Length: 251
Image (cartoon, rainbow, N blue to C red):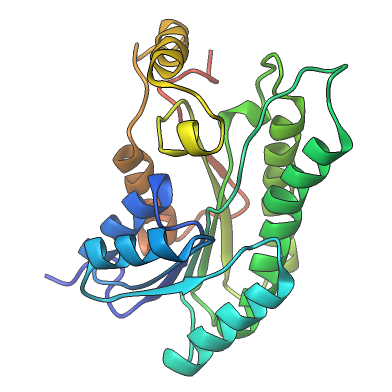
């Protein structure tokens, strides 16, 4: 039986670890040809080797427009089209009001907001009718958590993008939706946030205590939701936000 993404070419930015890597595995299992990006070549090579099959890696940073141009030129030359885009690449750092620096603000708006905008805009010439764009949001776009103001604002911007882009693309049959995860432990907790095992354990326990399902999520649970939004299973959805958060933002 053909998979839900058979004969589709899919791009996952930030695909060398965490949610991106889990989604790449799911996309491959559904029959897609998958392109993943990552900033660090060594990690990207490991991910491509792990994924195997129909996987192609392109090193790049979404906050650098020249990297995006090179990425899409590569996809155009190799595949000639793009059917699915999971704009997953992003970053997070946390500082409370009163301690926020220009560097902190600029870094995360550059990656999460500017990077996502141009990732999507530069993909459009390769996308035909029937294409699906999925943005990686977060439940914190509607939750007030201490120290999260900059990160949460970047994710709220992505939610706004999905609404306006769904209108901008009206008539082109290209859908734009947001997947908004709850607490999901990924390698970024250590590599980006600098948390140790004990800190991660405490953070997860705290999150679980306020989540109706009583636990953190897994990258694969998010990946399955992205497959839904990427495939024709969600063919009558655009401009929407799908929370995969164990109920944490729903109560």
